[in-house]
Length: 85
Image (tube, rainbow, N blue to C red):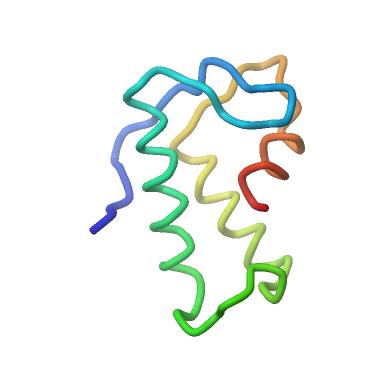
C-alpha cells in the first residue's frame, strides 16, 4: 500500500507538457504520493475525476507539493495541469 513519504524529492526537469521528469528515485514517489492523496481526500466511490470539486483538487495539489521541489524556472500551473488531469 502506498504511504505518504517523510522525505522531500527533487523534480529536476519538467517536459514542455508539464510532465515531471526526475531522478529514478523521485518518479515512483511522485506516483505513490498522488495515489495516497487521492485515496486520503476522496471517497472511494468517485468514478470520474471531472466530478471532483476544485476545492478537493486544490487540497490534493497542495499536499503533493509538500513532498516535491520543482525547478524554479518551471510554471507550476503547467505541472499542476499535467498531474491533476
